[in-house]
Length: 186
Image (cartoon, rainbow, N blue to C red; front, side, top):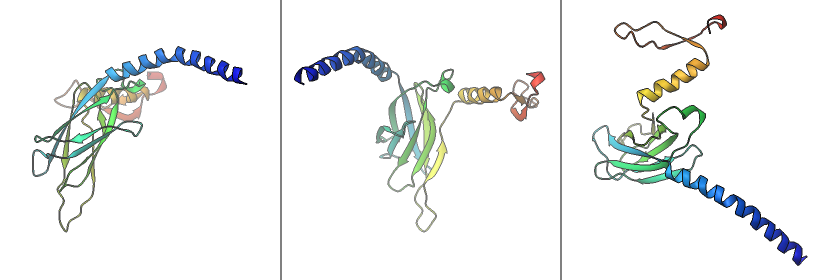
């Protein structure tokens, strides 16, 4: 029995020693690929809110960064980037969500904040109004117009949508139409 246990332990050690270098390389690559998100927190009555708590949540629902804004209302989060098929051609390498809370203000959730080498994400908090309607608010992340157009173009093209006619004064831009191109014109 003892011999069998020692044999299993030796076999397990051999298997683990084979995978540890591979696993450690994957972790090292992930650790070096980090994006920076600069949260600029203000309110409807102030350009900056110091001491606000920013909570950054990744695509798996895990908190990846949290901290307080400085006297300028800034909090810089360093978060892991990740590549998926939808974002491999864009500056944004993944997205996160954020929750921002501060004394004297209603909570704010920001969804789909892009992860880049340096994303700037403004957040506007709403002051608590005594005897008024107070509730959390929500906004979308600050995607660059280049990435946003690329994202829309990818899926509109995949669905074979037609373009609308040119916009007067902007002949180089035609928004997508909900109409699909006929199979013969693809």
